[in-house]
Image 1: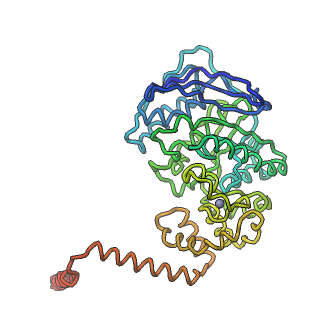
Image 2 (image 1 turned 30 degrees about the vertical axis):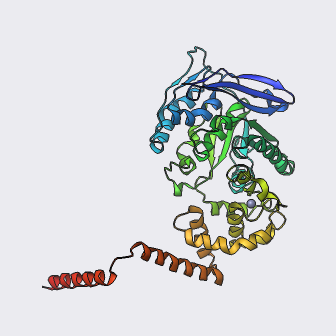
Length: 431
Ligand SMILES: [Zn+2]
């Protein structure tokens, strides 16, 4: 059983904390999980419900087969969607997980429906985020859906292993988006958390819980937010029930993570990454603010080594996978020259040909490579000579490795038998 206590609010220093204790009987450990906001937003913390705490714990509970006992109510719409759709959906990609029971305390009073009118939108300023922001800041957007707050959450986007370093990167992230906030005159809604603590040492990949941990943050401030715009990661064209990365089927469940007070919206679900890059490259804001670099997150998480960042002197390093992907797409769109102040273009140029080779070789296995390869064809991109040679060499190498696999087989004999078989069949048919 995973027992989540009634939440409460504490005021410490300049921050307000929404907290709850989670007793994990599987590991025999209690976690004090919290969300914190600065004083300006303290009044909006929702301490009468456990929506966010439940959402962040769900995958862990399913994975460990533990039912959840809640010390306070959750929004009925969210509970209904989790029980009826979200859990069965997750179970299809998590065969060793269990559909769990969620026990809510009996209460007679219906939960208060908040009247928050603010519209939050994730503001990492990467391609997905920028496309979301621009499509919800443009003229003609429906009344009540224009972005009013730039959201930044320390739920897992800034790392999830070294939590001290993750916290520092989150604080730096706030400073990085401040110029955009000043330019657009939109306030920053920053929510710090320790949600990762529950998952340290747990058998759950980040890509399985990323969306739930992220969307648990706006649920902490439902008195403020009436809507939250979540940037899609993949187009519905590439929909896949992937057990490794739940973003591949995000369109099936993200809108269901809404409550009576908070509507969660999946933005640009039909756009591919190339479509989004094309879309944002038309805005004058993009060459001023685009921030796609994942070198920091990789250093804090996957690499567990920050020495890689020593040579980074611009917002975007120019050689991580996201920088290379974005810069090459911008080059194909004829926009590369506009990005010298934001990207280390020298790093890009050093790695450009190996990146193009990677696109050509992996276009059938990797969605992003396929999209870029299609764009290369669309604009009539001519492969550099060195890449052509490398592709040829790679094909020869693959051919040799196939031959190695079938070493010992007498191919002349096989050929002779196949030819004889075909001759006999042709003769029979002609009779
Ligand atoms: Zn980078």
